[in-house]
Length: 112
Image 1 (cartoon, rainbow, N blue to C red):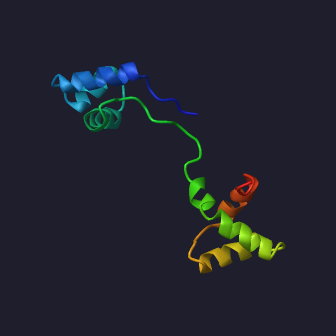
Image 2: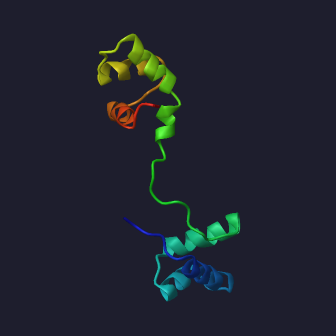
Image 3: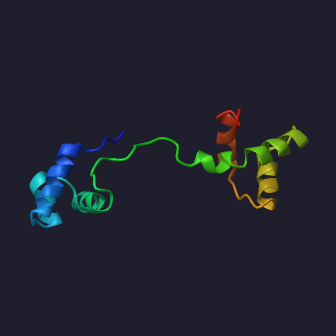
């Protein structure tokens, strides 16, 4: 798994850029990617900090969890419904979702 580069390194790269160095020159000087130097400088301007955001984790399950009452209602109405049939019902209801997404929803406990 990847790990974010230290805040100290990020701050040194951004300090070099703020002192007049180009992003490319600062990146080469500190041995980081040019796109990283650009991104950190932008982050400093916009947010005021170069601290990394959270890494990893589930960022998409909230989309399907928002429709849990509908999914569980369909399951209650037809207990032996297949995932493909459930997907078709959800699509008809305006919730486009994949079979794998439904599988993960139920694997997580289906909104307990």
